[in-house]
Length: 533
Image: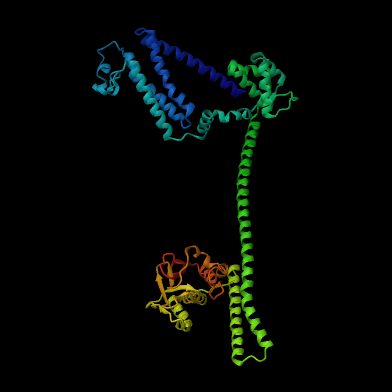
């Protein structure tokens, strides 16, 4: 109560000072202007000064970036322009042609003459002052507004003010009111000023908008605000508030209640944010589950294909072994030479079956992560030489020329030598298999840089189609392409090579820009790279 009395006294004193100052200012203007100039001239000067509010007013209607600082700066600079180009000359007296300030400008600077500012000499004093004051006002308003960001409250109010149609529906919900009021009392006030039909239509719209039960007799905050808005258009804001307050019994809202309302609003905002975040997370998880499901379906299909192909691959040597065994078992009169041939077929098919089973188990270990590799520092050129020595007889049988210049210096890399020998052996075996039948040639080269060691193995035989560059590293790739005559092999070699190289943090691929034959390359991390040092 004491603070309220102090505020009331301050308001009364402020009003008294304002009224007294206005009277003194009016008398001063009377003495300076009214006695020397006509009422029309004084009116025009007043309009020029009042016009300084126009840029801020009209820009604020359509532009969200306008700021308080820009508006204040524009109005002050616009008024100072008026003061310089209009009020000072009028105070001196424009009829006094002897005034040096008016005739020559301050300190004799012609460009600063108040009626011909910056050389603009073809306008009358009033239009001249309007042009310069509004130009400076608008430019300074725009410049300050775009140069400095206003605070969050300014930005919020600007957005609500410009986009009023977007936020108008929130006004009634945002109105805070505490008290007791009856709809019938407020309805009588509305009928008195709006008429019975219009009031009825407005109440129907309100009930439909907020889904209000017609049997409720007491008004809430939304209805109070709605009624005030209806009356404001007819009798003004102040009168509408007075009329509504005359028929409602309003209780004071204490500070704890205000704080509680704010806390509830804050909690609602937090809950809404959490719900939004949760919704985004659920959407993300749903997408991940969808992708995982597709991946599982794809893996299931691959598993079925894999099992079908394994069955097919195992059946071939088993059938050959069974057929040879049945012939040996049923026919005792087989010549010795033919018997040896059948036995040799059984041994070779058994070895093939054993190799196939080993490869399948090997690949399964790599895919499930059970297979371990044992890294050590090795010379890649020596590893390739060892592999070539083991294949020397096969190379001689097919009369293939191998071009491999072993480097004079060591080319070190970290790898499991046994596994890399397996990779090189497989790639060279494929090169021998697909080499040209007449003038077969295999070229092996090693390239070293600061990060990687790259090995290229080229043969001059049949090339690889571009669309098959990725597919050739799939399991049983050969058996899934029966339109091409199937070469000898399981179709697992390149798939195992890829797994071994990837476990070494390297990569393997078929070269793209080869005109003749096929080239396979793989890289391993150099021993001198930081991660291996």
